[in-house]
Image (tube, rainbow, N blue to C red):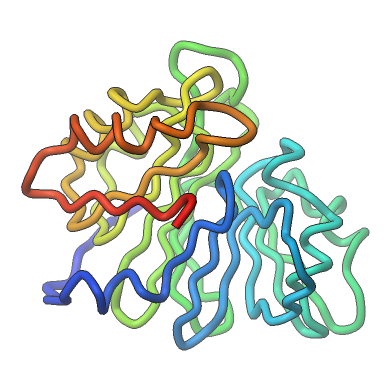
Length: 225
């Protein structure tokens, strides 16, 4: 798999206004297409998703009741290959499902997408053999890397991206310091902490993460904003 990085210059306000962390690891990017990643505890029925990306099978990432709240008639759902039938079971109207494995490149509704293996190194919650994934999603020329629930590992340490969204809550994933060490290694323009303050982790984990991130990388806190 080949990772690449375009030479682009964006101000912070331009790059991140389109990005929301709704709660935990529930992410929305409203650009030329509206995409959601792991919708969870959605408060209203948006029904505006062009594409929904699911990183893995845990309840706080694959939530059928929340997928229904953001999906519209022709939404495409992208899931790890082993979850394809589960996703098809909740499809309505003209919705469709794409199953993926790590280290793939594809286009979904015209959106360039790359999949990256997402797994733990020193714990057993997210085994590599499950072939769960993170996604590099390119929208408006910006490469967003949503890592999924993961530790720093040989597969994700080679990613190049503009914006990295990384779990910092510990227990099941990297903690705040480990996540900062990870983004310091891959060197995105912006780092956005996720996966803390509700299901797992403390509300202050985002601030702790920011303290350890290299000053050359801009940390942006989206949870609770």
